Image (cartoon, rainbow, N blue to C red; front, side, top):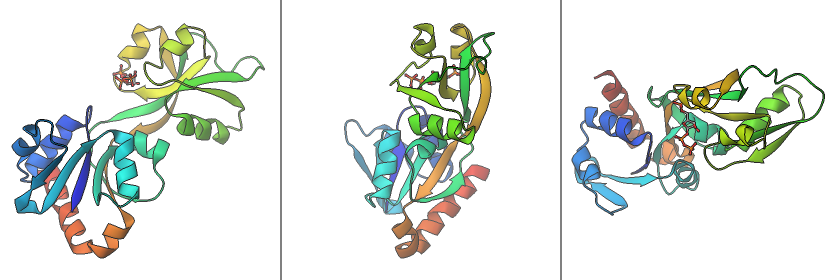
Length: 207
Ligand code: PRP
């Protein structure tokens, strides 16, 4: 089997969890520039990829299992099984704007800056509210400061970035945490192997 892990923010906690399930994470940590790490005793190949690419590899059947944030699943995910909430990487999606400004006042169409256009669109559709969405690739908090947007839809973890930039949460949208996902075909054709891996992770979470 092959598992795709999200590199970056979730990487450390994913390694800790794998370690608790008995995986030799040194082999992964000392990978150098190698992109595929073979774990012979588990008959498992490990790849580290950017979050959105983890979804692509799972959906195209290139990987059987994946670890990815619910934020990426909500933005890009279409068809796979989400089998476990891994309980780390906890944060939330929120609508945020300049402190003390009533976002809902006035009649004009509001402009929303975000890296998560689909999440933002779905959120405002749920409110039957027409908005203009501006895609920003990083440090979305800059957009309202520069006058490009009235508000942002973004990830809030500690709230420090908002606070230090004169912004505040207007409304929470959804809780986020890391998830274990499984390719739909692997779930059928490699059921025993997949289920035993899920069970292993479940035990690791309790260890
Ligand atoms: C994320 C998010 C916020 C920040 C929230 O950005 O987009 O900017 O973290 O964290 P806080 O509530 O603890 O301050 P990230 O660091 O991933 O970088 P990016 O904005 O460039 O995507």
